[in-house]
Image 1 (cartoon, rainbow, N blue to C red):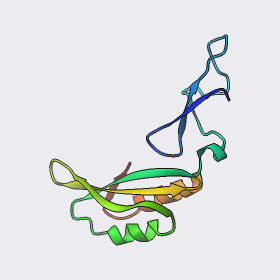
Image 2 (spheres, rainbow, N blue to C red):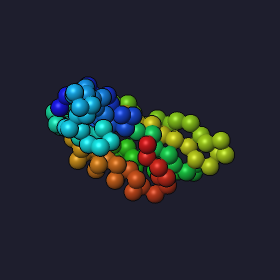
Image 3 (cartoon, rainbow, N blue to C red):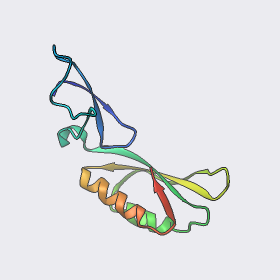
Image 4 (tube, rainbow, N blue to C red):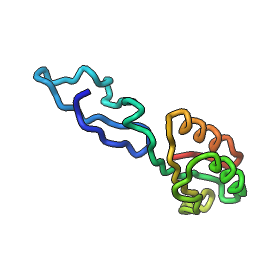
Length: 119
């Protein structure tokens, strides 16, 4: 694949900034310019998750248990509170070693009661 890689804000996905050929296109890219390049180029990757929870959320211990199976690079920490005070965020950094691990974390965190969104 010809081009340079640029990491998207969400870990594990890289955008290829193509080096155009004489026809003006690079046939190795998908139509939107995003690729899931060879895994050895993407992983391990450090992901920074922001978990949006309800203000009264009391499941930090559950989240820590889920994260214990992963390589945490920045511990679970409080983030900001929404302007209406209904939601707040938690932040965590995790090094993932493959897409499967990232998907597993995503599903497990979203399944915790009180979690509204995972960014």
